[in-house]
Length: 130
Image 1: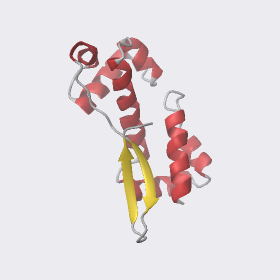
Image 2: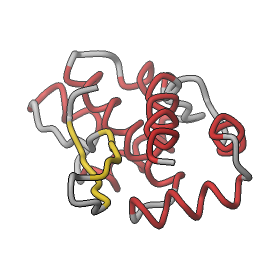
Image 3: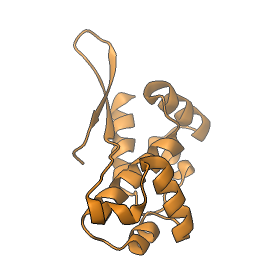
C-alpha cells in the first residue's frame, strides 16, 4: 500500500496545476474515496485536501520568488480570484504574495514520501526536492 501512496503523491505533484479532484485521486489509487482519505489521514496526519492546498501554496511561493506575477500564480494553482489566493496565501504563510518577490521571504511545505524502515516501523518522510 505504501508504494501506491507514493505513486498517488507523485500523481498529485504532476497535477498540482491541473485542478485534480479528490475523486480522481482516489480513482487513481484504485480504492474508494472514503477509504483512501482515511488511510491518507491516518498515515500523514493531514487531510488530502490540506496536503494538496499546502503543496499548491508552497509551489506558488517558489513561483513568486521567481518573479512570476501574483495574478498568474493565483490562476495557475486554481484560485478563481486574487482575493481568494491572497487570503489563502497569507493564512498559510503569514505574509502577502506581493511581499515574496520584494523581500525574498519564503515558506515551503515539502512533498511527502511514505516508507517502512528495516525494523518494520512505518515512517513518513518529507523532502523539499520535487
